[in-house]
Length: 338
Image (cartoon, rainbow, N blue to C red; front, side):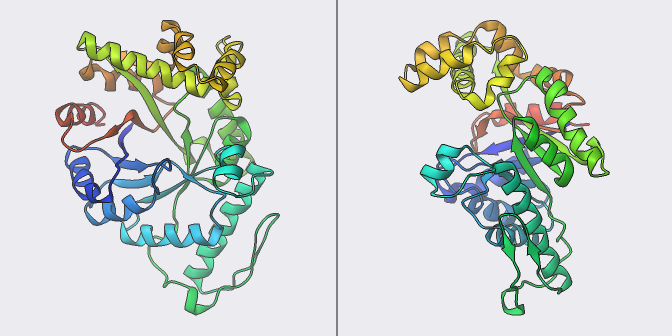
């Protein structure tokens, strides 16, 4: 199981030092996400200042960008990093895609499938020098002249990971992707009974196997070395779980454990922004299902015991900040070796 870092910084100026530290501490990869900042820009700096670690987006929102725009970004990052870049994409939800990005969201799974195939058609045209001729349900790409085509390169087979919670996106990952980003709000049971069977079904339909799809997952952790720190982390995780569990799309993660009735109650509280009351509904029993608790030194072993065979790569659901907790990060990276 590989151990990765989540990079969330307010300034691009801080990326080179953080990337160098992440590599030196023994992490296997670094992921950025699309929240308050662009997810791709930090990775071009990270690629320049590292030589070993994988670099990926977890995730970039797909639909506000065209397939060709994404193809160019991924191609350049793959070339710069000498094949270490992983393009991680997600659909987001309708409200954000339509009202925050001003993009279309109808038929998201089918649209994402068409987008992935369109990107691969663009890459194939660049690599082979052949004609671009993608005619899909949502995207029609038939024009690519030499002036707009980068030169062929050794890293043109760029891995694509997609993110999801429900079965149709899992099946899509199995059919056409190299990896799948598991949502932070997950459980070992939900992975084993819902996520992995759906990925495997998609893979089988495409003549592939589950082993062809790498699974990456952020893990909620609560370190219990210090009582005060543990209490702070516990409440932060409780709040985050409550926030995710209030989203109707994630109700299945509650249903499988018999807690589906909380979804509507949490949603109603979220509408009224009663955040403290939401967190109070997340019991210690739920924390034990959706988070991993233990001493800092024991967390790698506990995570591998819970997620072994389910996830191939993990990261703690907390950002890496250069110079903070470096000894603990190094200890964790060493705990995941082998």
